[in-house]
Amino acid sequence: MALDVPPAPTTNPFARIREDWASELRATRGATLPPGGKLPSIARTERMRRDPLSVLLPAYEEHGPVFAIRIFHAIHVFMLGPEANRFMLVTDRDKFRWRDGSLGDLIPLIGDGLLTTDGAYHDRARDIMVPVFHRERIAAAADVMSEEANRALEGWRAGQRIDLYDWTRHVTMRVAMRALFGFDPDRAGIDVAATFERGLSFYEREYWL
Image (cartoon, rainbow, N blue to C red):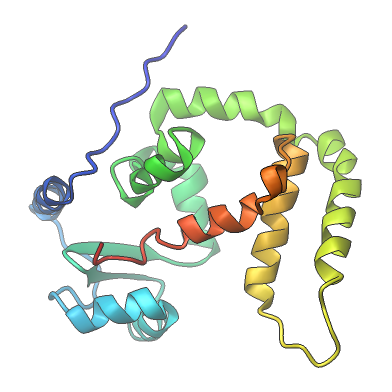
């Protein structure tokens, strides 16, 4: 059965702010949000852009694994920890919509697919992807993983300081491009993985754009 692609969220910033405010009013009507900083704060928004942990860790320490804070114009509810992950991604995932949230902002960068859809359309796309993650397919990608890890280690020098987070993300991106999608990350002489990471760095960080 063919399924129509759901309409993409608006990319007009003023329309998006209006929609977010309307959504907030609907969500909070007759409901109580988790504790946290809900008043507008330019300083908090800027800290979240520059160093998210400087905002999230104090909120976690004060309020526990579920809290709400306003970033720029919108209230964001954070749920941290394995129980929250299971609740959102497994047992109660039908209660959440990714497309109407911030993941919809990724559509201009990565296109419209598994990360940006919900419901029956998302489930069908996920079923199509399942064979790629079978044990045999993952084992067959071991050579690619080893090649990319060794390639990335070649640039290390004694005494050099390495940002392991960025390094690991870059290696993982290259492995995924080659092993999962058969895509050459160095095509046309461009490091596509690094270019994609630069584009992705704007996601939920450049609130002022």
